[in-house]
Length: 521
Image (tube, rainbow, N blue to C red; front, side, top):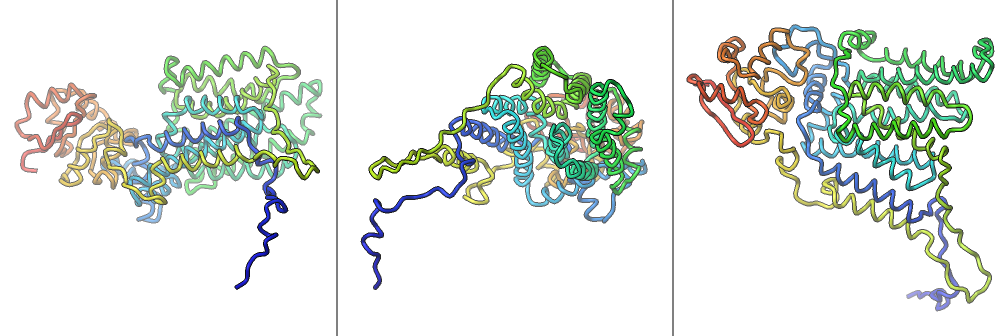
C-alpha cells in the first residue's frame, strides 16, 4: 500500500496560497452592508401576502395560457364582459400565472426574490458610485423605507423595478465609452418593459427629460450655438436612443393599442403623497439632500440629474403612485452627489498582505476573514428564510401565516369548499383573491379593476358598499347570491343586512367577515 512521504506532511515546508483576487477581500464595513441586505431579505421573506393585483394578473395569465391569445374583456369580472379591454401587462400576467400554479408559497418566494434583486442592484450601484459603505448602507435603508409597502406587494411592479434601476444607471452614466452598447441595452430594456407593464411610459418620460437636460448643458457649454449642439455625438446618440425606445414600445401584441390605452386611462386625479407617512418623510429627506447638493456643488450643474429629480419628485408628491419611480432615482443620484459636495471620502482600501523573506516570520493574517463572514451571513439569511425549505426541508407555512391579518383567509376557504352559483358581492380589494384559482374562482361583483365595469355597475357597487336601503333590489338585479362583508370597513352595510335579511341566511361569520347566502342557494 502506497504511503505519503513524511516530508509531504511537514507543514513547515508548504503554505496555503489564496487563489482569489484581492478585489474579493472585504472589510468589516463591507460585511456590515451585506448584513443589512441580508436582514432586509429575511424581513421580505416573512412579509405576508396581501390581496393585491398579483391575483388579477395570475387569473388573466391563466386565460392567456389557456386560450393562446390576449383577452378582449376583463376575465376577472363577469359584469365587464362586452366592454373593450386591453391587456397591457400580458407578460407579467403569464409570469404570475405560472408561479401561482405551483403554490401560494411559490408566490411568496417569487415576491421575495424579485424585491431582493432590486435591493442588491441598488446596493452594488451605490457602492460603485460612492465606495463608502456607510453611505451605501444608508442609501439601501432609505430606499427600503421609501418603497417598503411596494416591495412586498408583488404584481408587475417587482418585475419592472430592476429594469427601471438599470435604465437610470445607463442614462445618467457620465462615461462616454460604449455609447452604442448602452443605447442598444436601453432599447432592449424598454422593449421588455413594454411587454411587462404599461408603466413603461414613465421610463420614456425619464429618457426624454434626461435628454433635454443634457442638451441644455451641452448648449450652454457651447455658448448657445445650436449648430454645435446638433453636431454633438452625445446629443445625436441620445436622440436616436429616445426615438428607438419610442418605437420599442410598439413591439408588443397590442402595438399602438398600448399608447391608446395610456391616453384613455391616464388621469391626474390620484391620491397625493401623505408627507407625514414614512414615504412622505423619505420624500422630504430627498428635498433636503437636493438642497444640500445645489448649495454645495461646485462647477456646472448636471442638469439632466437635477431635472429628473425635480420632475419625478413633484410627480411623487402630487401622485403617490410615482414614489416607486422616484425612490431609486433619488438614492442613485443624490447620495453620490451629496458625497462629492460635502467631500466625504471613500472607505480606506483593505490592508495589503506583507511579504517577508524571513522563514521564521509569523503567517499572514487571514485577509479573507470578513469575506467568509459575508458569505456566512448570506447563508444564515437563506437558512432562516422560508426559501430554505426546498433545500433544508422543514414544515411549509400555513395559509394563515402566508397572508396578512386583513385577508379573509377563513372566508376564502369557505367559498372554495362551498361554491356559490351566481355572483358574489365582496369588497373590491377582497375580490382580487376570491376570483383567482387560489380563492376558488368565485364570480365576484367587482375587483380592484372596477374601471372596467359598466358605469351603472360602479354606481350600484357604491350603493351596496354604503348599505343603502335598496340593497336587496340591487342584489336581485345582478343575481347576487352571496354577500361577503368586511366588518371593519363596511359597517353601514353590515348594520343594514343585520337589521333585515329575510331572504338571506348567515353561512359563515368570524371576527373579520360575514358571509350571507340567499335562501335556497
